[in-house]
Length: 391
Image (cartoon, rainbow, N blue to C red):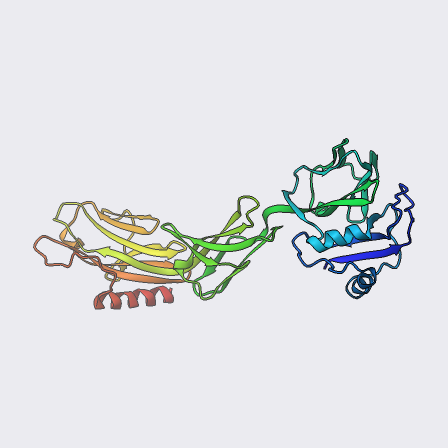
């Protein structure tokens, strides 16, 4: 809210500091607080002192006591002229936190006294420094320019600055409103998480900046990425394996490059045998059977023929398991090696099985990929499960 505190002074009055005198005019001690240069309605329209006093009493706060130190002394006529023309703060200057900003007041040889104020706090009067802030420095005090510099600007430096100029006739002011911008920063984001398929996942990304940054979430997979949310919190209900991967939080406010951080979501699910292929081989030749299973965590593989589990390295057979694939190799195929084999893939969430056939020359077989289980293999798998349970 824009608040103006004011107090009418009698003719010929002067302030305690600096002996500011304007004879023949009613003086106002004015304190302006919270008035943004972007507010266009912070003004009064009447030039009549009685009307102004009534309007001000109704709309603004009357001070119980005056602030210490040098006050803003503005002639009633000057205030009304400025206020009637536009907003109280005509100019905005935008800068980024940590920068250096010089603010300048143009003067002429009619000026007798000058001062820089931030709200009701005096920074400089002439060459005399009133502020205890070492970052505020007087840069120029000449016949044409009165400038101060604010070093390493912080968010608390945002607000109105007034150059108050005393001439032979009456005080004048030049005002600027500094807007301090802060690049986006992600303060808190969820840690990487592992859940089972079907769970509910809530991801958090808390960011700060000035202006307040817009937060968005994107889901990245191996092939593409897509927008999923424009909120600090992302909720995924009944998560599926397809929704695993990296989720990127981006916080943007156009002050600087967006702040970006990522969270990895791992979704556990039971094995699914995605590829098996029946294979033919001649006696005395090499033959291989393949079984591929998708699972998180990775599946453990076992091979069975009839009800017998095949051991790696026995009877000229080797089993190689790597990632999602298991390969059963026969180095010297014999007649007894032909037949139906069962691939079993399992992890802590479940198991899956599929039938694959090694056949000889002349046999008619379906060589296409298959993840189905034959009736015989199903019965075999029931026997295997029973034996594993009993064990």
